[in-house]
Amino acid sequence: MPARTLPVFTPEEIKQHTSAKSCFVLRGSKVYDVTSFVGDHPGGGDVILDYAGQDVGEIMGDIVSHHHSEAAYEILEECHVGFLEQSHADGSTKAATNGWCAKDTKPVYKSTGLSTAEDLSVETDITSDYKTHKFLNLSKPLLMQLWNGGFSKEFYLEQVHRPRHYMGGDSAPLFGNFLEPLSKTAWWVVPTIWLPCVAFGVAMGIIGIGSVGVGAMYWLGGLFLWSLIEYGMHRCLFHIDDYLPDNRVAICLHFLLHGIHHYLPMDKYRLVMPPTLFIVLATPYWKLSHTVFYYNSHAANLVFCGGVFGYICYDLTHYFLHHRNLPYYYNELKKYHLQHHFADYENGFGVTSRFWDKVFGTELPPLGPAKVE
View 1: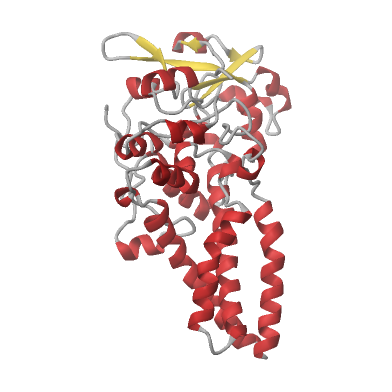
View 2: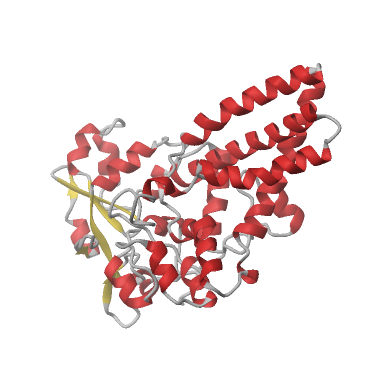
């Protein structure tokens, strides 16, 4: 399915659409026609008209001024009509779209090809991207392209960490066959399946130990241990880049485990962990807890349940950092995590907190200016 071809507007053209009869706003390089929404805006049409022809990204993200739900951003995307023209140093112009035109028109981070968190949501021109990079065609099943592509590890890692954004449906095709639905997981599946299991395990563990206080200590210990496992998996398993074998089996496994998330970071259905993959990764933790606490299976179960609860918090936090406006603390965490995606994927491995990044010296530094690549 080819990408949409949208018009490019000059700044002068944008200025002609600043009234209630024709109202355009910007968010990054994207242009939105919100004329039909002026009269329906909950805060009143005057608020929109005050920002007509301007970038609304900052004001929409300002939770003090007004909290915008995910639905508000979805409504805005429905009004997407084109891109803002940007000027080159040589006087030529080009649309700032994520088909790597953005790389040519403004400063970017060398490792990712992006400039800001907003670039993560700019639609990739599928045809242009494939023609330029000869990596993966987002309109065709990705896994078999990767398997048959003959890509070197170096080329694969360079490309997979340069985010794309697919707008041709809910998700870019991964398998292209009956396995496709199994590769997608809605965020609510995680608490729906695992919270009842955790509640049952905690109840049985406390009954077995015979003390709520002692049981709570084991549970909290498991929760703390999870925070370290979260950091360790993200850094030493998901980002095993330097130690990745240079063959297609290893590359495909890396892509399925975490590479696809960096390649398509705003994909809602491939962000949280599918239940089957969670079971595979949780099995060693189960064995570890029962090995360490071999003398008391109830204590081992409580430690394990604390860890699983930590995982649930991790997966939901991760989803919300990508797809929700959040209170102040989490909004700062969101900026931190998205910086990991668009600026520096070699640091910033903590998702629910920065604690272990600080301990192990991988905390993301203050965001510096992007440079022209």
